[in-house]
Length: 139
Image (cartoon, rainbow, N blue to C red):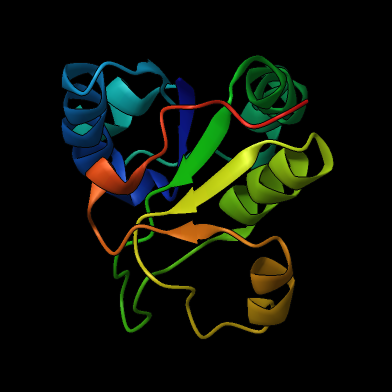
């Protein structure tokens, strides 16, 4: 299964670990743009101009098109448990519209858009990637 990892770039180091675990489990992984840079430079910030220059929205959309599933790495960030930020929520929306499977690493966070996330029917892994189904979803 080809899995696109999504989540806050403040979790970049954890994304690289998850990437290796998924590869070891036999999956193909698409990492977020510049995940390696964010992992080595956690203070890096990508402003709106850089996102436009990198055409990030379309890039991510096409990555979701190419994958079988999106896995949102939703860890605690600040005071929010299981944080899902705006960009990860957008990726979930792309996946939902494209009929791709959506996995959340942890339960749905208590955020204003909780109901929208729940309506996409993500599979909650509770931190256990062995719960990822190998079979690709129907197209």
